[in-house]
Length: 292
Image 1: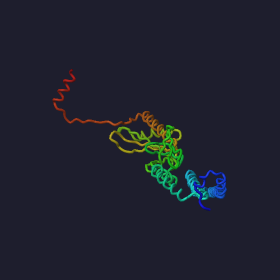
Image 2: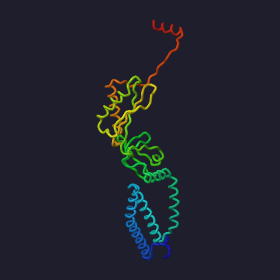
Image 3: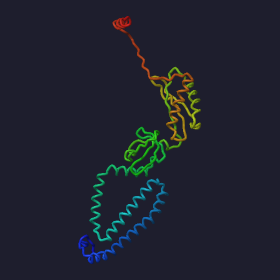
Image 4: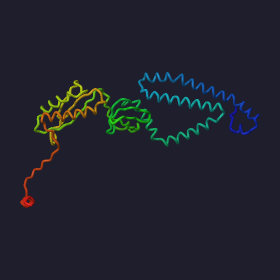
């Protein structure tokens, strides 16, 4: 059947209009049949596609995205076929859609780069929902990963929304990747103090902290001999990263308490000045200032 166009309906004669509508009935029926076929194809193929993706170990979020893309492709193909059944010039319509698509692509480069980065996150799985991570000095739990953004809930119960393009290009520390998490607290003691006594006092105190594991056991090691004292690292283990910051604060407090009770001096940065000689003029001025 020849393509119908808008000029077919320019006449207001009811008899001519009726004839035109009768001529369109086969086209409308054909478009409806194409729509039904497209719907059935999606319903039949969607479930097996999801099953295959799930068996492949792909994240559920990515499965939803792939299913959505599949649905959009089927819908576009069905729509094009329906337009063709109605006698509209499909080639011109597709050309117009292509021009609009190119314009939208140039206008939304950042969005597209975030979407591509989202696919890489789902495929590479550098982290998962529920993991505790540090990104750009922000520590928190990953609450949601979408195709465009990653949402993190911080310890202050604030949400940080990070574009996927940024988080995939930055350094991310995943505290949940290997099970148990080690918490490290740094403290300096004076050179005159005993490392052995300081270690014993600290280990005795940290054993009273709830949620610190006995295996691996806490330990205290010497990190360095600094300018103002001996730097010790107090290392304890916990079974879940969700308590990491809380355990850091409690361990720090326990270390301070242990050293105070053991009368071990906690050193602080200090500056010593050694004077080899002083001119007599300076001594005379100091004496004059003292006598005022």
